[in-house]
Image 1: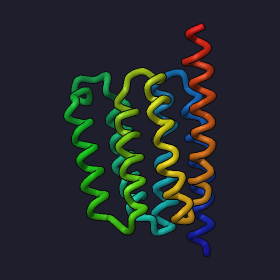
Image 2: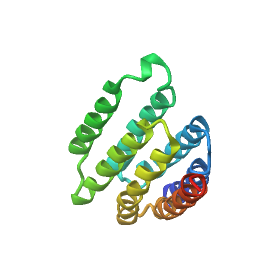
Image 3: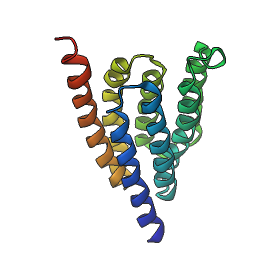
Image 4: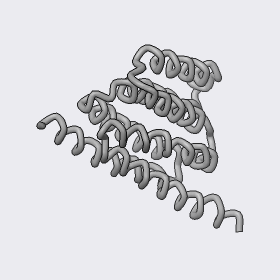
Length: 170
């Protein structure tokens, strides 16, 4: 029971940082908030026994740290993008628990593509498709605060799209 409570608390804190990320105008601040959120969701998923999601989030954490520096030569190679996608597929295969395991694999790959983008406009657009994958997976595995995060994140992304991508054009 204690693990369950800790997992849900970690998830709630993850929500806070995830929501903050989509309201950041600068890419570096977006990435930093994402790193903190990912660490908290790793804790939540692993404590709940959602191994595929938890291990995929560990790879996502490493990916986010590297992509945070993709303005540097060592981190800007497209090899990173393909390496992380292949790693996510491999981890998904090796940690496969059930048919629901396909959802975080798809969500993680989409998130990887989104974070590879330089413009926050593109990050927001692709990230919107990530939400439903993780929403369903989290509900199935009892990561309720993670599921709530996805609803909030999708809402926050839509607000960010309206604030920065649609209104800016006018």
